[in-house]
Length: 240
Image (tube, rainbow, N blue to C red; front, side):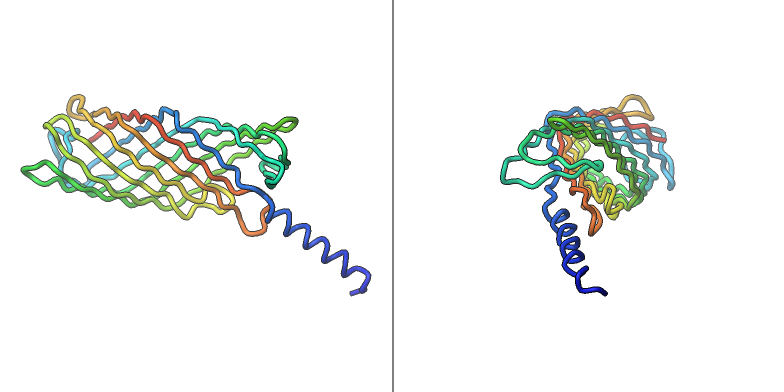
């Protein structure tokens, strides 16, 4: 290699590394959302005349959760730029981010409800698919990006059957090993009160807390994404 090209090559590598190292996280937080959720479950071992009442069971469960919100991130003079959707948002300015997130879950669910106190535990394992749409708006720029990825799903939970038709439920669920340049992982924790509606349906109301991340591939110039949101959760269960 001609020696006169060495400084140019080194300068190019340094610039590329600096661009990645200096990219700030796109940090979004919205704590005022209403989060809808739907679950459909079907027993695979045994049957019950009233599937809507929590009981010991083995089931396949499909669920979908959705959230839409926004946040504004301030970039001060000493902060790094945000790289998103092929656009670079340099300091000093406010960057407003709007997001639309969905998580689809398909899992095997084991539930054991103990007779007497009506207390139960459950565990889930399966697959998930996450979708995240982002729009970032600065002083003079606008960028959009859509992330999609599949991964593994796991969860644990518990319940207290207060009456035959009502229960208090808690569940923590994680989606992991998604695409590094897409949605890498997502976690949510739900605390909810459930009430049966007939033999095959129930409604739930409670509170849900979420964190979603996209860590990005090594060498990517795009900013890592950290999304946190929470708020009242409204759910519908269909059970067969």
